[in-house]
Length: 437
Image (cartoon, rainbow, N blue to C red):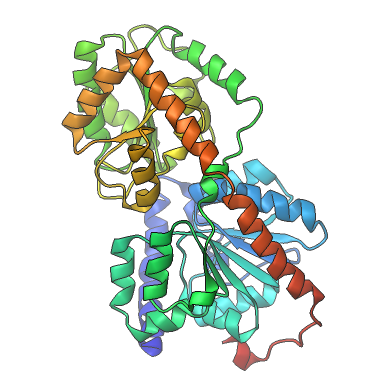
């Protein structure tokens, strides 16, 4: 199976590069720094004792408190953060500027992984949430580098996919030094796939330990004035292809009952901003773009959030949040960003990416889940016309957030223990070519 995996990676490489070129049509940054994806680097020394991998914007946001802790507690070690997407890279730079080093993570080709590890020389690896790369894990094991799967989650669907790989999957999951699972259901799936029981811990989701900037309330008040202080506002956050059409139809039906309602539409991927703006225009709805930095006249129906890093402000300023990626089979996104600011959230039927969190929030009366666009319309109309109900749901959300905090210190204690053991150990000899591959 290992040889087949390597062969498939080599065969897929041209298509992976073509996909970058295709995506660069809408986001030119995908055309840049291809060498990094193959393990080739130029310029300054990349050496860093700690390597954190966060796929894109969501994982960078979740990893933010972990990275801050590492920078403050181990200022001389150096932190390397890898992402897969340019948007993740941009968010990382916005949060940390030049305090951390960044390159794109290499494709999981043995030679590329070896070049990366030779350049960075990490003593500890933290992989956020769901990234499982067999050759990376194999190479780290050969170099005696501990790898932590942090804030780990594994959906039932993903687990079934891994299970089809049989012994190859079992061998891969055994190579993690620690798997810090978000919930017991996630931990059980990792164990069923072959992870050793002594290496799997349930630490909870660090997303409950969300850190909000002190200026958020003030920023939200400014945003609300921009939209129109007295208007009912709902945010559709992190929407995907095939979802915006449904949401615009929902908004038309909502406006039939709540005529002055405003939809704040925030696509997940910035390369889709122009396409979504064109869609709103084709639907004949009046549009103001956030990038224009101008107020919404009373006749504005849709406000397009076409900037980066402002979603939390939009949520804090809104009356209701709809969580995107859930009317289509993407699996949904994080409800807790809305819950953290006491805004009632609605999620569609496809919530498998955050199944445990969604179930908890719905059971505690802290969010609502709907079966389809018609259900979303009914829920929006009910909540937009009932401030007391919105307040009740929002208070429940804040309570659930408070009751479930604590995963972050548990994860940090685990990381500190591993990192302390690594730093106390004797320096290892330079790895041989055999151990690198």
